[in-house]
Image (cartoon, rainbow, N blue to C red; front, side, top):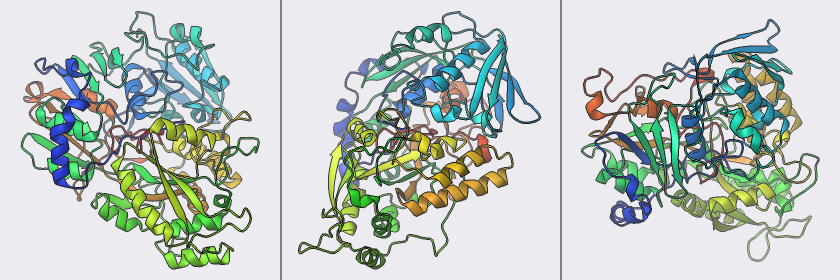
Length: 615
């Protein structure tokens, strides 16, 4: 299983080490992609692939941030988001709801064609939604977004009718770029339903519709796009776009400095501060749109209650999880690992959604308190052995837990070092297990883990992110499918989840979301540590319009969305005469319609891949 987290890989711990890596890392980072970096007179926008890469070009299966970024450019959605934060037509010119709010009717734009010349109709959208609703494989990535759908039909080529089981206030966030469901051409995909689980979707150019057409992809090397000059919402200002793979963010930073890239996101604090103020480069901070923390395996199981995996049984005890939460000094991690470019974590929803973010009261708070953590474990009967490690009185096993971290993330390594020290002080041993993202995600899905470092971002609407904590997100009876990240399942939480979907009053919905977050916080199966700021940089001598919005009083811009960024981006020569300047157009951060970019690139509605990708 994977998730949509943008990349947050950290660099070396010292500026000198960073400088050395910038000199040495470029060749490795550009291996196999040199042909894609040649300057063509400013006609090509160049950046790294989002996150750690692309897990699949099959939009029904993919979770990684790099994949979602690609889909937003080559497949359409029903609607999108205006620069001021309001919903904007895309495939759908308009939409209406019935008096009982159970029926939504979308009028699909006439005359649009897929890149192979076939007409785009309402049937393409209906077929896409119905496949996700009825096919467990097709629902792998986005099944939770249509869980409330009763039926989807296309009475004619320009009419799409969605009927829901209960009123759904979040309908306009179901199919938007990056964080929603991409609509695919039925005439291409209907022949691949039988082999959907293995279909790679790798015949180029890929048939789709969007601002870009995917013309070539070399795994672990690059992705190439051509601009769609007839795009309904306005053509990209570049003729081509290339996203390149890099061994690490240090190598991408070196490529930015040398002029081989125009834009890099997912910087760590050391890289960000090294680039800040450098001539020809603008480094900027964006409001944090994700949580960073640890997931605790409180009991991996299937939807029908069958236990799976190899998780330590003691982690099923809420008192053990409480002790772990009390042992973590979040403020120290913000200061020492993020250099202050983060907020201490508690809320499951990030600072980019202030209307929904929640904070515990003093009496509810699991602050840094090792003495209380020790007394909690003492009272629960976990006695220390001669080696100082506590023993589970039920299983007789020591409180020795596997701590999974991403092998390609220096930030994970730094945080995990602190965690092992703090856990030791309360009689818990953590064995750090660095592994690739693919291995980590495979273990997660099977329940073969104890504690994992993780990070999730959210889109304009938090339904998906909240949905991965519902009981329906657990794998099926065969241990397959599902989108859970910690095997959390709570009836009260599920009831609130259904209620918030139907809350059309934003104040009412905000209150329900805060109640849900309080339940998650108390369970401590997802322990928030910090909310990292998004850090990125671009070359001011090559690209303009890549950053949108005005910085707040602290200097942080609104979180950015890749779909809008790549459309707004323009070669400096082409944009020099425009009035927009580098500040671009303001993107609002209001309630349920703002799509944003995460620390590692795109602000995605969900997913995991690296320590910051779709996890």
